[in-house]
Length: 509
Image (cartoon, rainbow, N blue to C red; front, top):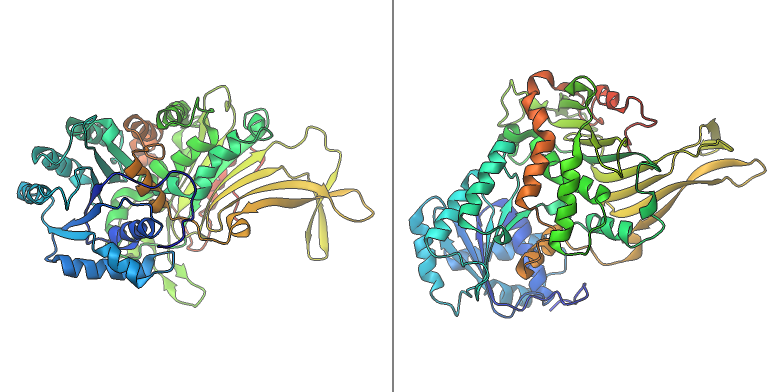
């Protein structure tokens, strides 16, 4: 077994059957099976467990085990030991079935009568298209594959985003799931919440007395949250993406979850309910910062064609595979929000995400107000050339990816005879502190699910509150036609308009 990289009582002791619906898909291949292997190699899984791959392809156990061995060898972040992999895949079975056919569940139930092979605690991971979530849960319930909450054995169901396409569909989905499951059995997964720096936001704020007192409207000028990607519609994603777009794909889960963690009130304790209650309060107080028209607060974009560093032509969004040539779907969106509560009233919150951006990265930047009295001059230097500028504000940066870490930009006296201030960084990076690789998000979230810890998962009212924030945008797409921006840039100039009345601009770093 590989050496453990974690502390505490995190080993799962209860026997469990883990059923992955859509087991022939990319998520199972690249993330889920490698994550479960790493948990096994670190002795975090129980001694008795079975993984069942559920899909329509005509595989048998041996073929599927061979495929999963290849997945582990290709995508595990820790060194792969042949003997450990061989023992791990002995726990894997394959079940051929159509997720939309009740007979497939009846056949699965027959297998599960062998409780020695298939423990009665069950985790179902729905790595399938959203339209099949309720179908799968309904047939699981009809076939007797879901235990009642509070019994001697448990059932938990993990569903991937998106949780609906708008507020109405999210409410319908939640109602459908809750007809067959208790809320405590549903785990809506957002892999961003499994990242180390995201989890560190709460500890940074609430475990350090010097920072929490300045997280409010008295000291913070504005907050920026950016999730930028350099890729376009590779890997056949065009069909999915053109239906959902940047708002549905990224804002109503990843970005709003980051917003919650950096702005929520201190919870009474670290229980899942206490933390999620505070997140819902923030979402209920958040709204678009509209002055006269929605275009004051939202800017949509779509990347055009261009040329890469090697002189190769880059397709425009509408030229990509499986994209409607006349599509009005946004590949970029920027918006300005406000939070109407005592802590954050008057502090603008800027969210931005897009494809084909200048650099891949996700970060939260908290920009503080400048001192009220300008006592010093500030310099900006590039090598030996320096210019006098205005005093720069302090900025606290939570970098989610890549090179996870927390950075604080402050002003200090520049060495020399003159009394001038220059920006320096105080930084904590995971790579500089620890030489071990960080756990992947799915590793943490799968272990949390097996423990029944729902802290990092989205509750039904939380998902609906996220949709309420962006529903005005969906209702007014006709007023928000996407602007074009060149690939490799940071969006388009029109997104800068959102900073009206604010001392700042987008961090394009």
